[in-house]
Image (cartoon, rainbow, N blue to C red; front, top):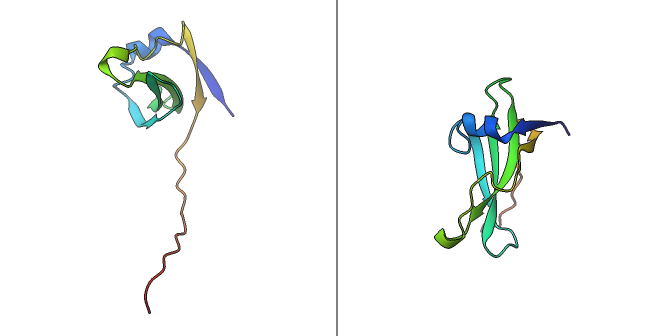
Length: 94
C-alpha cells in the first residue's frame, strides 16, 4: 500500500480538514471522549488522493484540534475511488 508523509503545516496551509476534501466518514471507536474521522483529500501539489484519520470530540467538552495527535508529520495512505456492486437477496410474495 502506497503512502506519503505530509508536513502537518502543509496540510493546514491547504485548509484541511475543511478544504480540498473528497470524502469524510466518522467512525465510532471504543474511545470514551472522541471518534475517528477518515478523511480523503486531494493533494494540491500532485493531484492525487490520500486518506488520513484524526480524532473528533464527542462533545464540546472533549474537543481536540484535528491535528493534535500528529506531531510535525502525518502518514497518509494513497487511495483511489472503487465502485463495487452489491447483490442483495429479498423475499417477496408470489
